Length: 152
Image 1 (cartoon, rainbow, N blue to C red):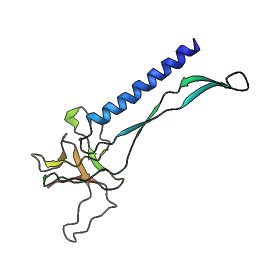
Image 2 (cartoon, rainbow, N blue to C red):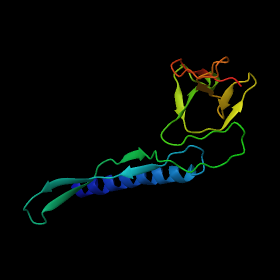
Image 3 (tube, one colour):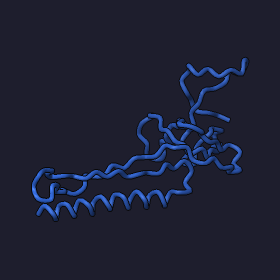
Image 4 (cartoon, rainbow, N blue to C red):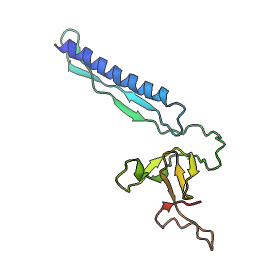
């Protein structure tokens, strides 16, 4: 039974790895996509002086990790498109008509923006882009104020 479990754990681990590779390939040209890597660990049932010295127990459930390394920044031609260099994110308020039930902020690296019918800066999914407003008299941005919907 032990060798069957070891083989089965290997098949499960391979399935998770193939899923990660498939997801990476399917989204390779998606704006702001972060690839995943998979880490494996061996399971040893016993290690000792018995004949053979080690008895393997298969593979632990692999962990899938997002890679947050900087990708390439490319020109899109969109006049309102923006990119994040480094480790930051754009802050957006979810589109409530798309089924979101709370007002919690979400974070994205996808900077494809446009202006909706109300003059608000929004994402492809009509999530409202958040930011600080400049004081119209001084032109200075108050970063201590709460973020709010950006209107163009």
